[in-house]
Image (cartoon, rainbow, N blue to C red; front, side, top):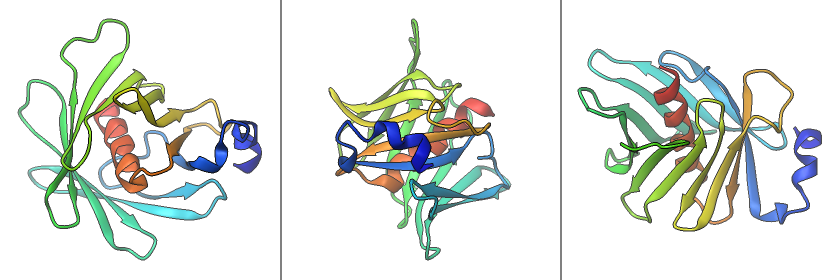
Length: 175
């Protein structure tokens, strides 16, 4: 991964955290590790199949639950809640009603600014922004490995929350 992302180092790379995700492997019942740039395990995704709702749980390397993704059923547009370790809503992701040229989603963050997600969500080529500031970028072009994409997260962000948002986007668009 270092070799593949090495070309990105020129743009203030010291302020960016990079992670490797696996496309379409984020599904209910599947478990896998999210790796950092060095190829080390950084977060664990635990896929749970429940009777009423599907759930993904993001854990740290020690096994502590950080975020839980729960799909809301019976909604006009796709909606997913991200709950914190205490069960409180940390963020809610909703698909925008009007999407003229690109996929657009809104993320309502409980203790932070609203985020916009725009780009080609299905092909894992999109940006997450808060106002005019880039929060994260998701892209497959950084990898030659099939079914793999990268997430670059700007400094000062809650990396686990951004990865939970990314996992939610994958879950919602590939179901």
